[in-house]
Image 1 (cartoon, rainbow, N blue to C red):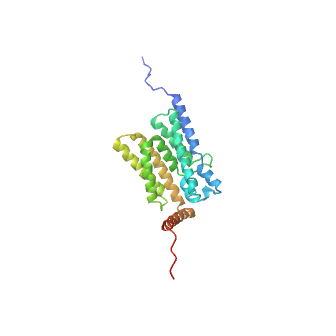
Image 2: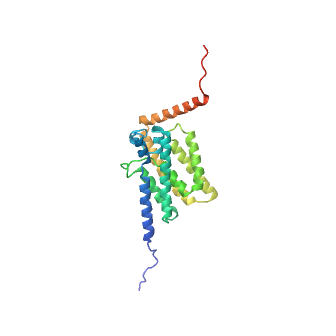
Image 3: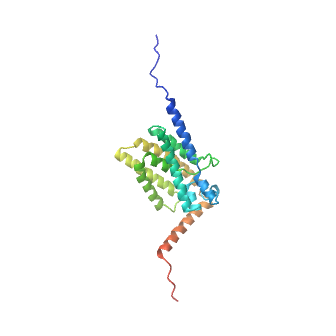
Length: 236
């Protein structure tokens, strides 16, 4: 006589529905094209400018520093919001990263921008802040410091993200906290870096990228001149 096997784990459809909802909301939030909207308000087609990506850096250098800062805040906020909404839906631990990943994917392939977008670094930053806020602050501060040091390179954002996550990994290993979360976030960061690297390589030959570096050098030179004050008249 055969006994029925009742040892199988029942499927919790409520949890599955919550995860699907969190992922969909995350994707829609990530799809909000702040860079595209901000650039259009300034009369600029962001997909025909600079790196041709709808991201913070392209807006910052080709549209305006203030506009780029606002886009950065918006992109960070949508990454954080995706995770926070998933947490409010009681999506547990590592599964909230699915919502964060969906937000990043939405930034890459925006539903509202013809499935185009940016590299997702600011959105990744927002996801990281929402998941591990205390460690993220130190990691992000380190990343910004590296970006400033490497500001003449078109790879500055990639170096900054790499430095940020190196700090997060080091902190999680040293203090033995949030190791699984940091591992999951590092996986997301890896995808973002790969996509960013591919996009940057494609855009290296674009005139806009050269303009970005020239504008950056000009800004640095102008700042240096401003610090020195007005030049003294020449004696003849």
